[in-house]
Amino acid sequence: MNNTILQLKIKQRLNKIASHDYDNIECWQIVESFNKGQSDWCRRNLHSMNTKQEGDEQSKRRIDDLQILLTEVTIPLSKHDKYVESPTLPTNYFEWKRLSAEATTECCDNTRNMVIYLAEVGNVDELLRDKNKQPSFEWGETFCILQGNRIRVYTNNEFTLEEASLTYYRQPRRIEIAGCVDPYTQNTSVVDVECEFKDDLTEVFIDEAAKILAGDLESLNQQQIAGTQVETNN
Image (tube, rainbow, N blue to C red; front, side):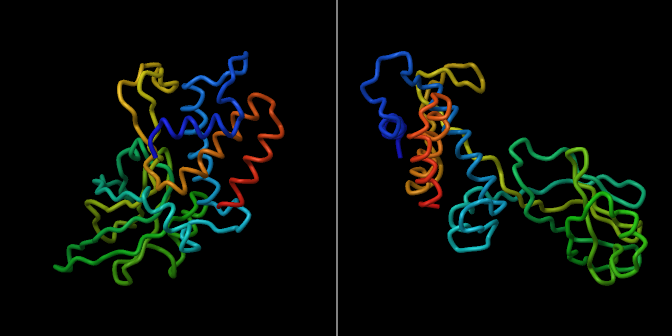
C-alpha cells in the first residue's frame, strides 16, 4: 500500500479529510503514530495480548503475520571462564526466537549441534550445579542468558563454541513520507518508505494509528471505533 493511500485512510478514519481547523493532522504525526502503532501491535501479538490470546507462532495467522520480521544472523562468541559471550545485540533486535551453535571438544574430532535454551539470570548457579540441566557436550544441551544487551552461553569449560546462529524478531521497518520531516531523525525524508507488511495487515496498522491520533486529539468516539476495528480484524 503506497503512502498516499495510507495517509488518506488515516484522515478518513479521523474525519479530517477536509479539516483546516487547529486539529488538522500533519504528515509527521501520521508517520509517528503509524510506526508506533505497528510496533505496539507486534509486541501485543508476540505476547498474546489480544482478544484471541494467540502469541508467537500459536496459530497460522500469527505465523503468517509475523514471519516477515524473523531474521537470522551469525554472531562470534568470545571465550570467558565457564561461558562464551556475544557482541552487543543487533540494533534492530526486537524479540528473542532461538540460538543454535556447534560445539567441539579436545577429545572429540566431531562437532555436535547444541540445543541451547534461554534461561533466567537468577537461576544460573542452580543450572550449573544441577546434573540434569548443566551444560553437557555428551547430551548436546546447554543454556544461555541475556544480560547487558549480550548473549551469554554457558559451557562449564567442557566444550568450545566459536560462533552461533541467532534467530530473532527485528524491529518493524519505519515508514517515511517524502517531503515530511522524520520525527525520529529530524531530517526531511527524500523518498517514500512504505509499510513492509501485506495490505490486510497494513489496514490494521492504519486503525492503530487512527486510535493513537484520536486519543491525542481527545476524539473518544473515533478512538473507540478504531480500537474495536483493530481487535476485530486481528
